[in-house]
Image (cartoon, rainbow, N blue to C red; front, side):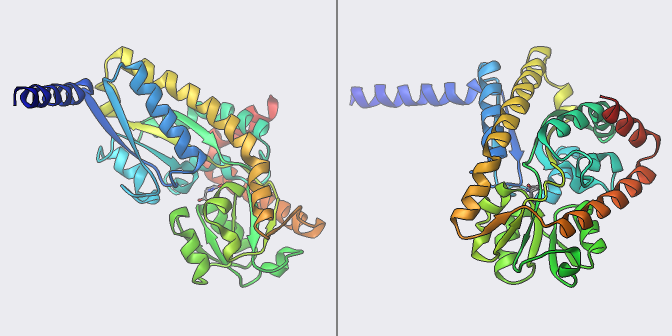
Length: 324
Ligand code: PCA
């Protein structure tokens, strides 16, 4: 009996300690599955923060749009419903064209170019986020974007009338330029959309193709390498301002580390994902000359359109990018 009481007392003590060890707990909604490299990287970020704050700040990642659907995450963090979150920023280009600087076809189509472009854009993008009560923590680029189709495609003309899954305004615009029919679908619903014929084509990375096992519905992947969109991690400004200086520094230092390790992983996995698509029966290869030049034409049109929308800030970013 005595022993039981001692044991119970011990459990109560450790429970009390465990709950008081974390002075603050943040839920972190993300849109992609737990096994996705961005999500794994976000979890590593949360460990870094827990370690750095000696347990004073616990961040819990909620994968696959389970807490908020992808398209709702940014608003949830802006309004304080979630203190921190990860979102594909270009999906919010309707709020500010600067958010889509990473999704202009063929402007920056390698990791090195993507880094250069982001370095040119980051101050203005951060300021735009700050104006929406969001504090930028870090971002990681997806692998280069290619075209998934059911049938062989040699030119944009072959895409006419195809139902196309878009994930942002830029992908919807490409669909429009190619005479396809765009439908906006989150990655979490992609497998379902392909299986039920809601979409027969999309543009994304090998990463999302593997996550969604697209070989179950589609046959071809054309490695167009059109751009590298970014997931951005941000904190609600009021919540961030409420942290003490030491904790703020931990969050930012861990963010800088996550940006680095996340990109290293993204680079390293790019070829592996394409191999996995091929191993599962997909035909993976470069786009033919005509398809490539058709896409480059869309890129030229969309660069003009973006510059017209993004005004002097957009031009300053592109000029700085090209000057380096
Ligand atoms: N995967 C995400 C965005 C870019 C990518 O490679 C998606 O398809 O939703």
